[in-house]
Amino acid sequence: MTVQIARVEERFKCPGPQPNGLQAAPDGLWCIDQVDLKIYKFDYESGETLFEAQTDTAHSSGITLGDGSMWIASTFELKIARLDPATGQTIAKLDSPGNGVVAWVADQQNGRVTGAHGLEWKDGKVYVASPPSQFVHVMDASTWEEVHSFRVPGLRVHGLAWADDGTLWVADTSAGTINRLDPEDGRIWEVIRVEAPTEVHGLTIHEGVLWYCDAATRAIGQLHI
Image (tube, rainbow, N blue to C red; front, side, top):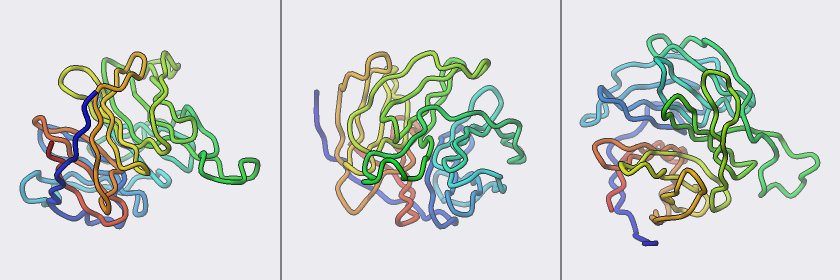
């Protein structure tokens, strides 16, 4: 296992107040904001907003693309929303796996139940990062049945991004780390430290470079290792 410290390069600010999920696409960088609940698509170089649309999600925390749809973690609804990326309109809402009270809430009996954060797509499956369960849950998109899961390190799992070798980058916002994991058993292959004050909420990868968004500062940028 190797450990590295990332060099943070902020590229631009999100127009929304709290960007909380990112997904790279060939034609632009998608983002979901957890306060205004809008999806945005940005130009990688300039940060120009190429597209935006309102969603009917709640405190949204993750975004991915697959099967012609956009998938968003509607955290406070305890749902994964499937949207039309051309309009932002909801196609379906599916039960989010791993819902519960997050570990850092002292009153576990009366704490608020919340749902998923980061999302990724691969081979017809949606990978769902759940802070309450501290697992990544793997959902078959066609049946919405859980077909696999694996535990992740840390306290507050958030953004997900596929590495070129098929391992999965998994951000832990509270620990300030990004772990590269085996998606079969959760084995840790590599750890990147992201020093304060930057917080990695959303995570994605474009042309071999990790991109992050920080809900605390509205920053969107790159992590160089």
